[in-house]
Length: 425
Image 1 (cartoon, rainbow, N blue to C red):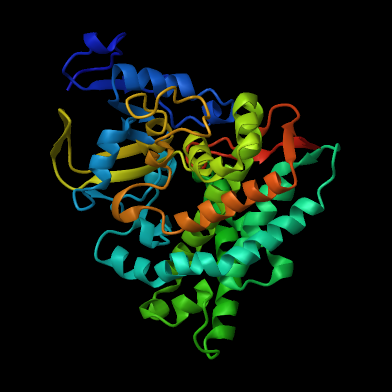
Image 2: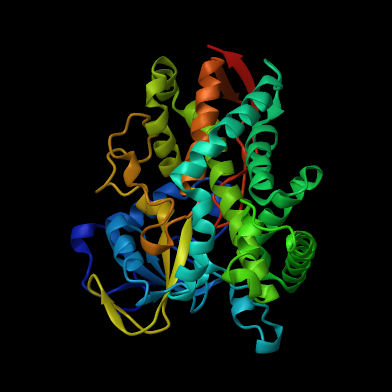
């Protein structure tokens, strides 16, 4: 394997694997590049010069950058060779990797399991996201969306993330779990801590995060006990109780709750925020959509592609293998950068532009690929589509005021706050 170097042009790239020692521009685990929204040219350079490369000695240890669509799909299609379970599904800081075994707290979740456990547990929750369930939920989602939009001020600044994106997704989570309505914002709070990979970088933050996860587990355990004798019901918690997941250990229970809460929160919430921000950045595309609401279903896919709410997932090689000419060793960790694959020039023309009538927008990888593709993808698409439809029905336009406050992390790719003013068109 070659030592650290960087090529300057694709046609000059040597056959050896590009290995870069951190700190390095291509170490895209760095949170500041997302907080400052300057990740795009870094990934574009990698796609041109070394779409598969290795970073060593980063704050997250050694890992492979996989930056284009084809190898990501290849890896996702071979779940036995590239494990989700071996070392987890996100990059984890070296400090957490090096913890003594008696200090490691594991919360297994089915997205971070391999077959057959993954298949068994996913099967329990999948019926909550079928097309028929989406039809059943549509009127409720539309009613709640309409109520929120009708109570927003016109011509006054407010935080779109808080009042629209978070509120809509949190309400949906509360309904899915039949969660106490008055406490629904706890779901957002827990989700933010659960998805915060930066919190694993220091002992103080690790302990604070763990404390919040135990708080969440205790709250849901109380709900579990209350519903244990109530019989079957359509909410997700009841599905778990009245299934083979009933006897799972407390840590697996917590892990799957974290998965469902984060999965139900981050993708939808950050795509809803991207709708306001992205169309404000591309006013010609906004005008196109405003003039032709029939483009909304395709625009939803394009917004999900353009935003990519979860920047990466991680896999671990279970044996030595070759990946498009690169020698991968057993135990190597591979970061699948969906955020880059969704800007892959070989798949998407002019990929940095948000194009509401893009013909192949549905080819995005924001929901993953293969057996681990997001189980709640239909629900995320439904919620975003209805938001766009209800905005169009009211001829409302969100005008962004200043730059948003972005999440400083390499996993959740999103917005913490964004001031907007609503106007009519």
